[in-house]
Structures are given as structure tokens and as C-alpha cells.
Image (tube, rainbow, N blue to C red; front, side, top):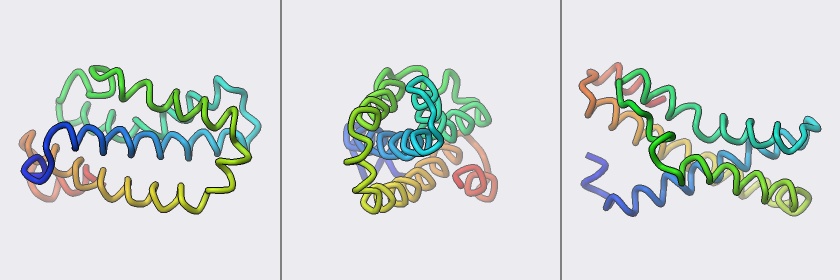
Length: 131
């Protein structure tokens, strides 16, 4: 369904952009909580990849995309480095980050629902898992 709207390369770029914005949100929260850089990276990875990782494990899409595509794992590390070195500047654009975070959440709900449906879940279960 969704793959009919976007080419695989566009879909992959959108995935990476969403992961990046989610990771910035996680890394900024870590800064506010006075985490060290390792804590920032862990929170950025969990925030960016946790939902998709859990979805893939539940539907049986193993190994999860987060482990088969180096870009998925490294994008949160790039976001962590950006926030670590430039967190006052990133903090100033928090409104824009929130807008992109919301857009990414909407996009990932659609892609998650679509992927769950393609793996054989019914409509209700796919929608629930996509959320």
C-alpha cells in the first residue's frame, strides 16, 4: 500500500528522517535530565528505534530492520552528537523539532500499520500495532 506511494529510496529517506528527529527528542530529554553522552545515546536509540523494533519482533519480521540497516542504528548516534555539541542551539528550535516529531509519529503510524498488515495481521490488530 504505502510502497505504492513512495519508491523504496524515498521511504527509506523518510524513515531515516523520522528516526533522526525522534533521536533528537530523546537526546534533548537526556540533556535536560543531566545524562552523560552514553546516556544520551541510549535514550536517543530507544526513542528512535524502540517502537519499530518492538513491532518487528511482534509480527515476526526478524531480524528487525533496526539491526539489518546500519543507517537505522547510526542515525540516532549522529543526532546524539549534534545535541551533545550544539544543545543550546537545538533547544532554541524545539518548536520545529516538535512539529517534525509529530509528523514523523503520524508517518510511522501509517508505515507500522501497513507493515503489520502485510505480515498477516488483521485490520484491527494492524491498526493497534501501528499506533
